Every structure is written in C-alpha cells, then in structure tokens.
Image 1 (spheres, rainbow, N blue to C red):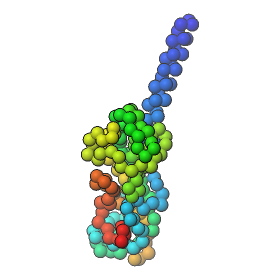
Image 2: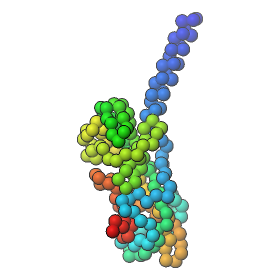
Image 3: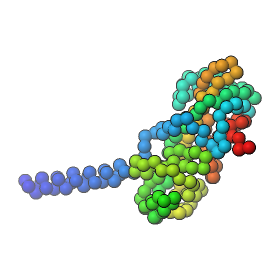
Image 4: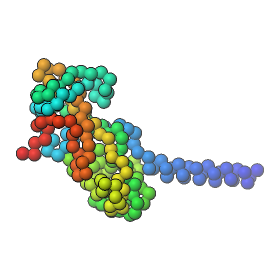
Length: 193
C-alpha cells in the first residue's frame, strides 16, 4: 500500500512540474488591448481624409452594428485609438540570446503583443517587455530567434464625421519587414514634417 501511495505522489509531483513549465510558455488571452495609442511612426490624431470609402461601426471591437460610411475624399476627425492584437506573433528562441539587457534561452517563446513606432511589446512567461526588432521578418534564424507568425492587429479609432456622428473605424496594421503600416488609405494620419 505504501508503495502505491509513494508512486502516486511522484506521478502527481511530476505532472505539476510539467504543467508549470508548459503554463509558463502560454500567451496571454486575446485580444491584447492597448488603450489611447497612436501606434505608427509620426502618428497624429486630428483631421484625416479618406481616399477610399471606409465603413465605421457603433461599438469598438465589434463588426456587428454598422454606423456610417466615410466616403472617398471625406474629411473626418480622429480623436483616440485603441490597438487590439487578436492573434499574437510567435518567436521561438533557438539558442541563447541577449538583446537590450534581456536574456532569452532555447525553448523560450516570445509572443508579439503590440507595436509602437519602432518598438515591439513582447510577452515572455507573464512579463511584458519592450524591444526593438532583433529577429528576421523573413523567418530565417537571426540572433537565435525564428519569426514564425505575424501578429494580427486592428487599431480601432474613434472618429467623428462632418454631421457630428461618432463611431469606431477599424484600421488593419501590417508588418512590412521593418515597421507597421495601416492597410487603409488615409491622408494626414502621419506627420513626420
């Protein structure tokens, strides 16, 4: 009887150790939201003009209820924005890496949470880290880290049209190899002047 209890004890202890190691590598829950941000380089809120028709929505983060259509050439005001990452980027560490005073070990998994100008927010074992790009966007092994998956980010911008109607405009962000760009065609959102 003591032998069975002893074996059960070691099985339970082993399972707890394994589950702790696996749990340490899990990403945070999606979506990851950064409130009140303008994530692009030289990003400015204020008066924008759309070059193509863009649909707005009544509720931030939801495509269920349409609000109004911004027509091509229409001017509108962007007042604030929240960046939502709905799918995380994925960076497995293949060999020891030290970047920007951070040490990463083989087996670590870095999740790309968000982007701000030239900085990335990464997740590792429950901690958020800020870092500049040190991995190769082509997926090649560079500095011991592989780029396996691009993050999917939507920047929900609160807008007001000339009629005074307020709604949310979803803007898709894409990584172009060096920095993030907005897919939709809008004038006056970047002012590097």
